[in-house]
Length: 215
Image (cartoon, rainbow, N blue to C red; front, top):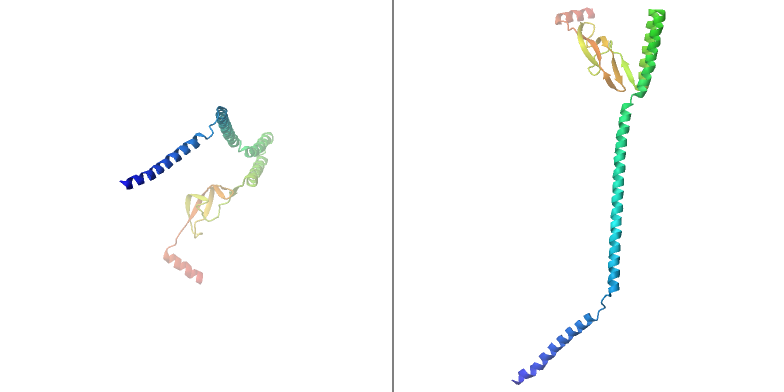
């Protein structure tokens, strides 16, 4: 019994210290400064001002976006319009040169009506044709190529007829029905031609020919 009485005061002191510590903490918290009404109003006003600032910034960015979008749409329409104009008048230079050739033909026809001189008219037409082809070659890279006597080339020639020929051992153009043209380095129109079909001699004739050549 005496031991229990001796331990009770020690427990009471611990409890007392704990309670005192809690009371002291509550007292310190109660002594922290509480924001006044004016300070709360200032904080609210600052927050509202920041919200207005952000709203103005969003409105400005939205306006810039709409302006950029409108500018791009106008640019796209302008580019389409310029492209259509470029395609419509792309051949202006060529047509201007053709007008000059037409003028030459008109003068030649008028001259033939006045003089009725076929030779003069023929010479005039030949001159116009030469000037015309030279202009197309010089300004536009359009060249007319020769095929007669050339070896047949399917990249340049279109064979309309075949003809036997003992004078050639390969396919050669015998006749040029329609001339071919090259635009820069590309065939614009194939020449329509007649091509030789080499005749193969019988073996006995080949031997006789070889013997005759050796003698």
